[in-house]
Image (tube, rainbow, N blue to C red; front, top):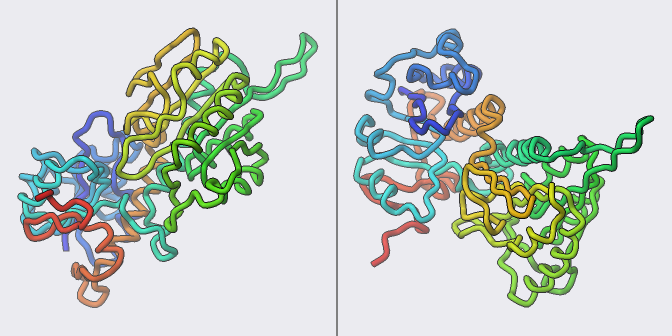
Length: 375
């Protein structure tokens, strides 16, 4: 069994899919591990550390590999290097990318999307959405602090008092909760909102104030899988009015709202942005899906009437060493379930709920029910 660690060809992706620690774990499963040269450099892992852990560093790492692990979905130029029948595991971003899915099917690889891992107890250690969103939420506050022209904590000095910054988090998933915790550590006065009633207690437990229209629709605003439901137009209007008034008093806003497979919901309109004080900052974590803030642009900081809108894609990649370490552990935990411990060979159980939830392609076809080609 040969496992190949691919180097990311996207120059904006600094993460890597393995760590020296997971290389050792793969070796204990009986695997031969090959790493492409320089795969871990941007994450602070030189080739020598992979070699010391027992991997082979080679330009031919992908050749004849039974399993290829990556951070991002392979491009067509990469697929030609994989043998037919190989397993390819990565963050695949499958929604709306039908051409890319077909390319993987045509290449004859079995592609698995880590972000489709079911949110069940058994799969918690494999949850890449949580591991990466946690760091993205942390980094969003750091980026906000960098863009903000004042200090976060209240400071009482002989020369006068610096007031504490007011920070508002919109969307209290994993990223939002970490943003709240980080902002609180830095001394900001934090408030947060979410349409899921279960988040109120979580927000308050972190010392932040919860803001929402708490009507009957709000009480039933969560799916069985723990995601936010799309709310009615009437509720959205009431919540928008409450939020608009709150935003006027905030120094920093961090938006994190995403619904899998859909464009990001618009939470902050241009009028709301213009109502904020000059010097205020908005950081939009949903910029790669169109953004929660009107006017946000991927990879840019837009300034409107003195208010900055920060749109940095792949915020987890700004903490590449930490993000890679967690992602590598997510991958190992999943791959361990695909290996026969006695024969030391890959033995995928295609009826396993983890496999059924994440498998996109197999034997030249797209097999995931959510991504079947439309007739």
